[in-house]
Length: 623
Image 1 (cartoon, rainbow, N blue to C red):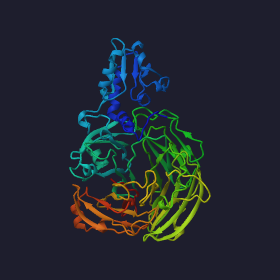
Image 2 (cartoon, one colour):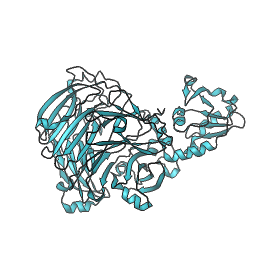
Image 3 (tube, rainbow, N blue to C red):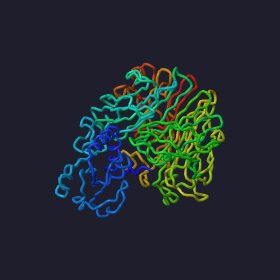
Image 4 (cartoon, one colour):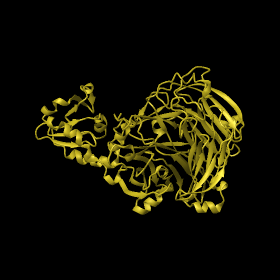
């Protein structure tokens, strides 16, 4: 496993990782290492030697630290020595593992060996024109970055869609620096794209990129760096994957979640008539060694490893059946990647249709929370995981709980079922499910034509909980056979009281819950839609004050449509039904809808539908 700290609630912890992992930083570090003349010593004032050496193994013989508590510790395969001994180290080059390091170098200059050359990580800084906050390199806004699975091959194309939501926080000149890698990790193209001055929408099309740069078909990944941002250091997007000529395949997936993880979960085993391929993409400039990546049936603890190296920024396809033959749905898999990749995509082929979805981060830093089984009555039903029941006359809706923490050995769950009007139509205790359970429940059993389900904790037979409750949701069109699937986790929704960091998305102190969700408009052949859910852990407003706010390509609101939703109810909305054709034409190809509600927090899933019976679905993002 890479010894990297990818996420830390403390200021700066994750920024250092992003600063080191940037593709331009990788190139600069290679040039820096070429200048190292031995013997080479590393001074580690900020505790990043593990990450630096893991991602960029170098010719270091000695490691020095100034924290006495760290002396004797192993970092990057070296034993930390006291800084006071650096003068007798005989080092010809000393690399100070820090950014903005001039003061550090000045303070230790009198201690260094005579004639030693001193270098710092300031030599691998991004150019100033790529920085949002130039006077503080490790400001999180300097590294608003992410990856996207990107393909234009075999009749399949990708389209990344989002909006310049940074303008809502005061950003005036936002642009994207983009780099496209092919399957071998080779750089196909690097370019910049200016975003609208206001909160306008934008897209990046794989077909347009191929034409612009004269590229052959490719399957790889797109690195995205947003510059000039404000308010948010996360690059959020929806990624559409679709077939040429409006063919049978259509999918939508959420952004990649920019933090590498040791494990991912929520990967379904194939049905007997399906092929499931995991697209694994190296997020770093260091190769992934053979034996690092593995697949395992969830709960089996018998991982099967990939015995090949994956090159820097390379993409490979792993057919699940090659590693776990005979394993079929509803079994589910765990992916082990050693912190080398961000959230992977998987592709399911069935008959002539292909669908793509994503796995989720399986956390290794959670433990059961004894407070959840004894939440006070003021928290109502506590954590809820809402998911839509699409119109039963056309769609089959199926869900499967998915363990999403290495410490989740059981899942004590109940299903509550609601119709669109917020009436509770059914509930079912699912049991205290083991980690390797095979439950996949068809919502047809409950006879609800349209509405939503909510997974909640239920401890009547014991069990433990940590709040990191997830599930996979699968929808099948009964007419065309097309399937779409999504997965997400639980939150506490719409209560005045709080527990730890829940409910989330407060615009101020409780009860300041609100909603801002992004919904794209689709195109001439595909109509967008959203399944909006008003979940409530306890009593809240009887009816929401939800509005669909249509924005044009500059981000200017041009029309509104009310969508009142009953508490614990839901609604399926379609911009092409909510707004007339003339106003949608005025919105333009980069127009979009914001789902706004100042009174409650909604949850939503969105996608596209086409005339070929294809549709897509994944959870929405907000800002």
